[in-house]
Length: 334
Image 1 (spheres, rainbow, N blue to C red):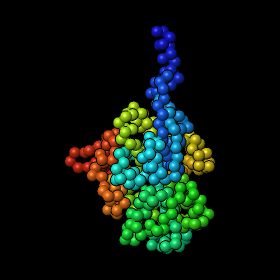
Image 2 (tube, one colour; image 1 turned 180 degrees about the vertical axis):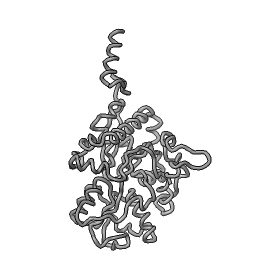
Image 3 (tube, rainbow, N blue to C red; image 1 turned 60 degrees about the vertical axis):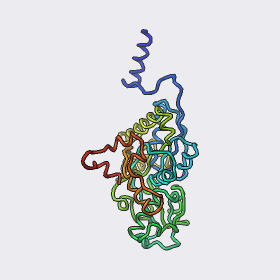
Image 4 (tube, rainbow, N blue to C red; image 1 turned 120 degrees about the horizontal axis):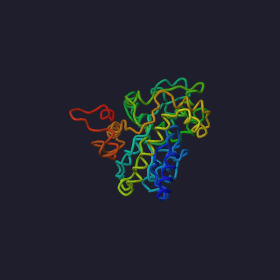
């Protein structure tokens, strides 16, 4: 008994007075996680390097894909348990009958359409031969471009023939080298790198199009994962939250950790982490607005009637349901 108490005391001292959630000696639960490219996925990199998932008794298997559509297919096939994708790719799968829901919001970041052509000042200046790189058809960049095209050009499909699919690293390289494309709709760090290049400028940004900030990505899991592995699901949510909190509270250390991932200096990475509009948060923003537009424009057959149709209970608990009239967080879903 005395040895057990001594061991407990030692563990408490080692962990700074906090007992870790992992049960020592218990088998690790494997979880396959799908991410993509960019500073958006910094929480996953932080979780990987700091072994945050392991602290929660999870054994992560990391997979990286070039678009939300690819993540969607990996989830459908069962290749991964949880994936991160834009709201539009999620809604396309949901509309087609995929039994999945949103597990968390995932980061708010600046998104912008950048061009290397000084003559392109607005969407009206794009010619039929001017190619615009997005990660894939149906990506959040594609849908934002469609929203902007409807406002400026009268049709959401006005620039669909200009679109070419490229992963963000390839799109950035093509734009900067002026090979094959005139514009790239992208995210950090590629957005920031492109805007720092001579001759490149911003045509339009995400908040101008949508009206307010929204989750660039959401975490998505199949219903079967939520139902059959509740402890793993809960541990995953807690681990993601811890990774985001660590970034927000340790920007300089995060910059040093993340810099090699993007081939940047820690100083430049820190500058990007502090760029106006960057927000590492798991709170949901803008979940319903994309559904309404995509249904109206014909990208999906129907829009969700409520957030409850597309998000698990932990997300609904964050949003809440204010009596009398919607709360700010309820309104910002549209």
